[in-house]
Image (cartoon, rainbow, N blue to C red; front, side, top):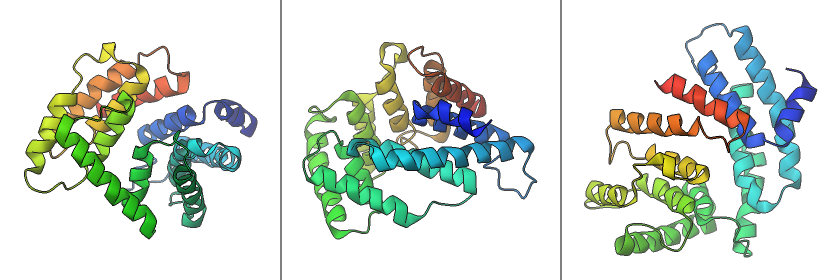
Length: 249
């Protein structure tokens, strides 16, 4: 695909196009590290990812602070696929500092789940302290309600996904199972697409503390089947979910 076509595809749909390229890469074998010679398709996908990286870098320089998390996630995944290595930590750290500063200065378009996620890997003392304080507050809320009543459904599932990865001490598995039973969705057709995407991230966090791998994988296939049929998704996203379902079946 030419540079001009790539740019046209992603200027208005960076996240969807990134998702699509990653699923194509998975199917083609870009992530199979067995010493095989890369196919023409794998090489083309890597080239497209490198073109995508250039566009994301420009968007990151201009975007509103609250758009940094999605763009950085796209950048990280596209870079690994395009170059076969992690991106420069100095580049990403600069944007993370900008994001954290914006949140500290009162930008409430930046969700708490984003800041919590930063604190998991950030070496900055203030970031880590914020993460620990937020974890304590979240545990208090979950202890009282088993969900987060004062936020959106999508953010509720983002926070739950993060907490599923946390060590919460004694009776960890029983407590997390209680959260799952309180927040589970059985009728995916009744849920909006944005919420269902968030629920998928939550669902994949349920192994191993709540669900076995096979149960988690089966749940993920059901969600993918629903998402791949959603008409309110862009064509790249919808095709990416279809490929993911094919890969996971």
